[in-house]
Length: 304
Image (cartoon, rainbow, N blue to C red; front, side, top):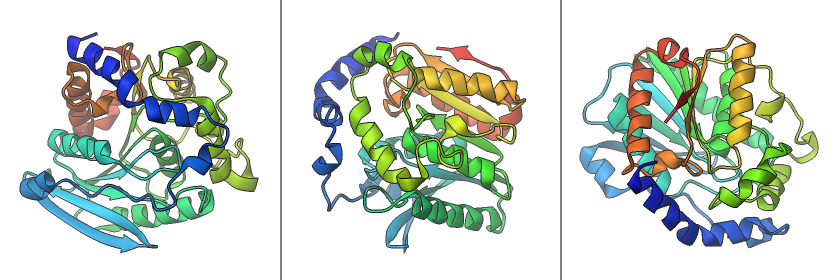
């Protein structure tokens, strides 16, 4: 573990305390701000490229085209937020580093959230945006990426899309919405941000009557044989860690090409801490993956 990761983890215990405490509550959904909105892209993105903002279904869609682009490469990003919270400033840090690493034009989709709207609305919106990107003139390679809950939604999209993505990148994905893995209880004391009660409340509100075991919604119940080349980053200080290990093993058992990169000291979505060596290594690997997803994802598990 690098010194900067140690210091960042220590800071997380302080800075993420309000999130951690809120997620311990069974009535977590009542703590949500009904006026919550996605964070706007930082001004520096407009200085380093072109930002186009549109609105569809009442929600913003952001397209960032870096000044130095890889021709034909498109990336769709699905931000996390426990299925109930919109993208935050830290998501833009990830988007910016993904653009630097890959040269892709990045489309950030703000999808419908619970409890106001449910999974059916989310999937309809995401599928429509993906189909437009897939049909965009000049698109030669199309990647899908997501963090946390966005990672869960990204897995489902990649398996049902008529045109399979060329690659899938997952940062600390939420891979079992039911949160039934007994290892969670052993790992929760090391996680500075996530707690089960609030997460489960959000998942239950999102799936509604379809239930947490619906194989169209919960990656833990999905068949993975059709999974595109996949790169998963997961930290050991994350209650989702053991589900990421199980997912990667199951993907390979079903002959999908999936590579798990584990950072033993990494917290939830540690790639967002772009100043750490662990995050820089993650983006470097994503850059290589964007050039040759099949080769990079074929290498199995890698421990940072």
